Image 1 (tube, rainbow, N blue to C red):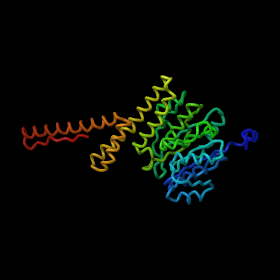
Image 2 (cartoon, one colour):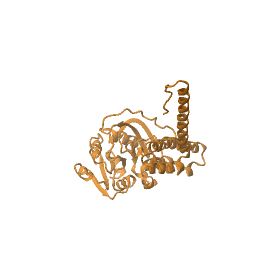
Image 3 (cartoon, rainbow, N blue to C red):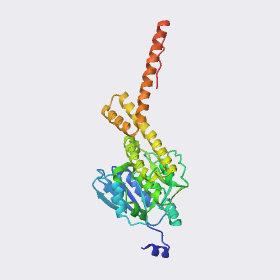
Image 4 (spheres, helix red, strand yellow):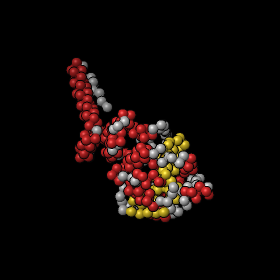
Length: 332
């Protein structure tokens, strides 16, 4: 149906749900069922099997979805494959381990319908555990004013399913960048918000499952790919002091968050004397992407041994003065 025909009939726009899946078949049914429970009447579900070695195909076959299989190419490529085949006026990218809340499509589509200038709209989300039980969630403040500027400072979209896009925006920006697979969604948010109006609201629309398979738990991967995504923005902000400052702040926030995690992982591997090759590789990444993190790591090691040596010397001195006294202490 054309846009003019849809407006004349008063029917709501079709929403396409793209669900990429790789080694997440055990969660896929919950994701699909969260879509089928929507109060919004017009949607299609496109499941993209990204060469998954599990029973993704069998799970998808139990539901009224369009199933697409491809060789394993990564999350960004799977989203692009679904985007190429979906037919909706609006599109939502739902990861296979996450869930939508029942009114999600109704809430977000209404906001896009109300403001035809918006390229995407973002609702709120909450955390759930691996078994689907709710977890305590502190919602980040929704950006106001210049959203591109706020997204440069910090990515406030914790999961793709919070976002509903107007599908036509991808005709202008292209698809997801496979070179930054783990952060391709953030890259899209920056590219779109730099060119088009976008909006946030506070209504809950999605649930983000926290478990050991989350990509964001890999600090080396996130540090490398987020650095690449953010540095691409330099060409677009260099003529604005405000935007340049926001980008520097965002880079610093990201480097401190993931760089400190990576430094901690290095320390743990060295302390436990395991995966030493991995520790050396991590140190090389840290040196290139966040040199300050490597310095902080070295300083903490030095500080630890200095404290240990001082404590040992003090203990020995006290033992001489008071035989049998235990003056040892432990540093963190």
